[in-house]
Amino acid sequence: MLIKDIGEQGLLRILQKFCPAEIVGDDCAVLPTNPNQSLAVTTDMLVDGVHFSDRTTGPYYAGWRAAAANLSDLAAMGARPLAVTVALAVSADTAVDWVEEFYRGMTACLQEYHTPIAGGDVVRSPVVTIAITALGQVEENRTICRSNARSNWGIVATGFHGTSRAGLELLLNPEFGQNLEKGDRISLILAHQQPKPRLDVLPILWEILDAAGAMEPPLSPPLAKGGKQESNSLSPPLSKGGPGGVNSPIAIAGMDSSDGLADAIVQVCRASGVGANVDRTKIPIPHSLSEIVSAQKALDWALYGGEDFELVLFLPIDRAKLLVERIGDGAAIVGITTECADIWLSDSSGICPDFRLEIDRGFQHF
Image 1 (cartoon, rainbow, N blue to C red):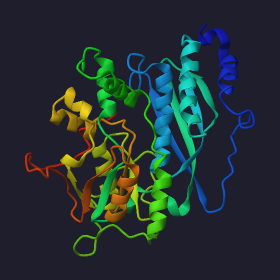
Image 2: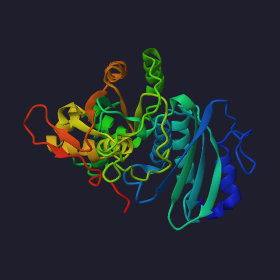
Image 3: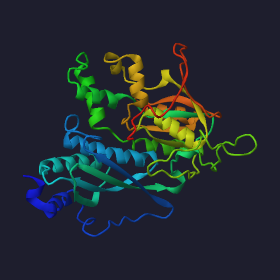
Image 4: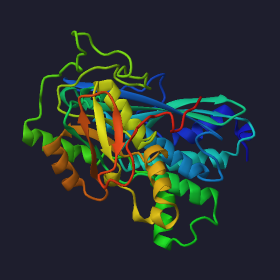
């Protein structure tokens, strides 16, 4: 059975089964918020052949990853997910089973975080395209912005990096990594197919910051000599759905590592007007990668591979240490922020030379 066999209304009836009956049916889904809380909104678009393919993910895992990416964006802002809407563009020759499997994958991920699909839209397109908008609720004094980092703060990666890129390589090349133990192979593949948004980190983070009395007034980025704010290398790049430089009164900054660990570090540093010294020996890379690639390749995958969907958080060093201790399982302090503008990757073992971290080595659409 194909989409053209059931028509738009038939497709909509199938998709409405995945949404709570009390939410869908009108032109908008109305989601009430409480006083002193904000509605966090993020949108991601996925295109067949660019973001997913049946060769590596299939519709179920493509749906899971699509949901996880949006939930990860909410986690990076400190927000609790409320609902998502899904805009689906398919051709008339798309198999109905493909669409249902995609939505099953989305639903499986969303249900772990009690997040419903609250509606969306369906259109005809020669290329399968999905646009997901996620809505979340965040307390005004707990909004995690990219522009809040200060010098001499710790940079925390909440888990292993390079795993999703390794999983993708295993899926693309089945003969690759035959020396891996079965459990390690499955773990790397699932890191790519079923990533976990780190919403679980937020309760731990709030507990640590509340105990430390971490509510601090927002500070302006560092000033250049002569009293003028730096505006060239430190100017924040445009970001999708970002807060536009809004400061939050909480002593933390961050984003997720969906575009790579290096991208996250550079973006936060630029938005905050700080630099960083990142220690390559502290970057959490799973031991299984050493079984299939060189140490340099594993580092490249960790820095630039992307789609690990961990959080990269900047906060005072004592709180950073406590956060890493509480999270465990691959969490690490990978560097320290500095007053200068440069972002360096150094080697505390003294083996490799230092070099500047840039974001243009990671995935770019254009």
